[in-house]
Image 1 (cartoon, rainbow over the protein chains, first blue to last red):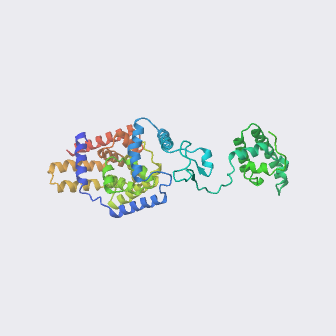
Image 2: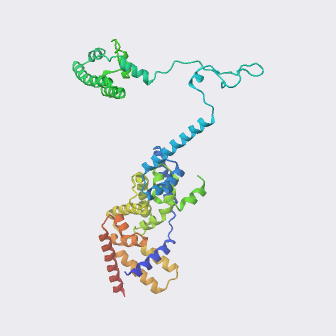
Image 3: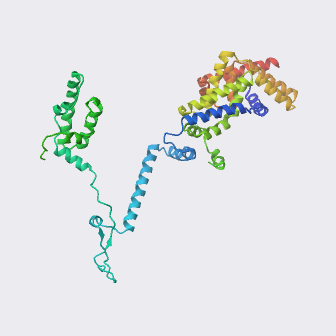
Length: 233
Length: 186
């Protein structure tokens, strides 16, 4: 078969194809239903964009980055930087456009007018404005407070911790004691070095690895549970 | 989304992008993909099957495989290459079970040539080629059909899961056999 014959055959097949009925409504229905079913089974729950955005992303943004040899990670970084710059600009505008109040003024119940302004208005009404205030609440315990607990309160000894636990099997006690001893040495060392976050993380790891220990939720609570005298740092 | 939106981007939307969007749960992307390729795929299968019912069954299996494996598709090859590769595998399974004794191609072209009022010589030549084509092993017929469909050697090699050299040699053997048959007929 020569190239010309292939071409002739190709042309004939293309033309004859128009005579073939490729309309298969039953098949179309089955396939499209299957696609619908699959789509409902696994909808776009992976944080992926909607159809329109997905198409736009796949056709415009992605090729743009691919053409410039840039990865999606680069896109993410650029996008994050743009968001930060925009937020920074918004804060700047806010600072520039609005009068500012000092921390003292904010904490007092009245807002004083500037010192060069008259203290009383012409009709004798004081120029200070009463500021309605919500009842002052106790401040929420901050990280600073937690830190001070860890610094000032000694952690209980391994024996003290073990004493609070109930073991059904005696062998568990020695296993837990060994694990606790190692962890508490690490934690105490970290606290002494001022690495309080590391200490908290190490404690959390211990707590997760030793479920049967039923240790308190946080290192601070463990420290507060001790009856010892505060550290003097 | 409004229809004009899809019309506008239809030309710009690649098969790969549509499949990706479908794998994220958007059925309308699949609808477009299906509309785009259903005819070409059906003809490819139909021309190598014994009858329409079998062709529909194989086409159904092929599209179901696309639906279930959409998320695993890697855009190393064109979507059409991947699609025809799945169809090829289904056809091979079919040939293994039932053999390949298709007269669809011959009937199709004969009907077409008669309806077109072609010259007796033209009909004779093409019928000769098609009859020869039907005597070829199915893998050689498939290579010829894929070549006619516009696939490159590399793409045919991907679809049929063979080396490019094998594709070329199959096509060469097909040419040789067809030429031999044509010359014998002459």
